[in-house]
Image (cartoon, rainbow, N blue to C red; front, side, top):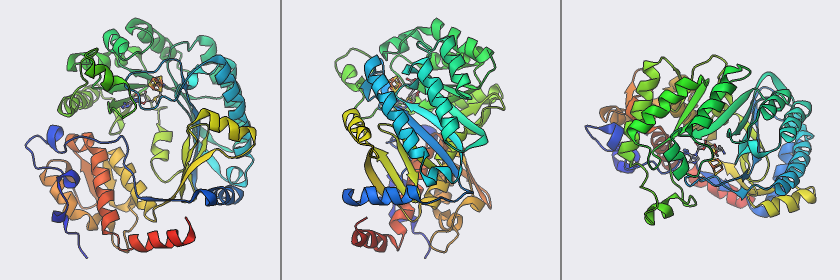
Length: 461
Ligand SMILES: C[S@@+](CC[C@H](N)C(=O)[O-])C[C@H]1O[C@@H](n2cnc3c(N)ncnc32)[C@H](O)[C@@H]1O
Ligand code: SF4
């Protein structure tokens, strides 16, 4: 059956507007597109998880390792990811438990049966570990896991207290990519967001790390923070260029429920963050700036100035690759199941002390997961390629979604050719909404959806 696109409302297909960049959708709800997944009953989780890790995976599949460090010394006002305030004692105790989990996971037949292509130490703020811990962690990952010869091993963090010694010991530990959250270089923006260090300190540190040419230095910038006008954002972009950093992510500010910022705005302590149309203009400025300076676009929000920057973890983890999670609050997916580990530090420590996997949630991924992943990866890269889309219930998915693509084309979001759907500037800004819309439509049109849910309910997963 062909797709009747007119039964879906504007939140799915977007509105027809002379200015789709600013007004195609009301606003972006979340940072990532998701597919339907079915929760696994808690009593079934340990058994399924053990079965997965005790069996060998496919040797040819690409894999990632994600290690989470759930501490920050200060909570930024905009952040949805903050978990625990860092103290030396807590971090040291956690590090011990983390190493235990790392070894436990590495020893499984699944971990030893394939090749890991990208490793990401994320947070929180992994650079709040000590220099020695960072080196030990890097070396342990190299010793314990079968890594590809060109594996990308990223340490995320911030420049505050990231000394020369830390940089050297990270390199000695085998880290070959550094991703620093900058958010904005502007001192007023930084102070109002509770970022540590002023503009000059940040510029100086990033410049000197980049100039060593030891490894790609990647920056995260946000757009839409309080006090961050379009002029301030343009200066942020110029500042990025002046540091010589090798790559950049431009992220639209999305304030989630737990971030303290809105409360501060309500109390009149800081001005409100930018509106969605204002953020769209900033995104446009970012894209135009990168084009003007011939900085290579790797995805809708990531650019590279250096051939060494591949952004491998981001592209693999968003596509078909399996991700082994390690740490308190880490998430991943293996063998058709998605996992979240406990976010509560106490619970995590308790389970690690007992030598148990700190699993909090397990979901059976949709039978269409590989299709959904291809769509998410395509929208994230800015191009949907017919050849990379798996079939949808025996039909060519590109053809099946054409009524939607035509509507989006009329609305200025995409340009379609025989085998490719290319996002326009507006489409790139709204790429997560477009991916969510395509996945929503396939989910709701799938004839097997009901059967699938019954089957899993009957199996207790
Ligand atoms: C989890 S943070 C870790 C980085 C590091 N702790 C730091 O502070 O720079 C990773 C990135 O998420 C992004 N991020 C945090 N809060 C965000 C929000 N509310 N909306 C969009 N992106 C956000 C920031 O750009 C940040 O660099
Ligand atoms: S932005 Fe980074 S340092 Fe700030 S609270 Fe979030 S994770 Fe922590």
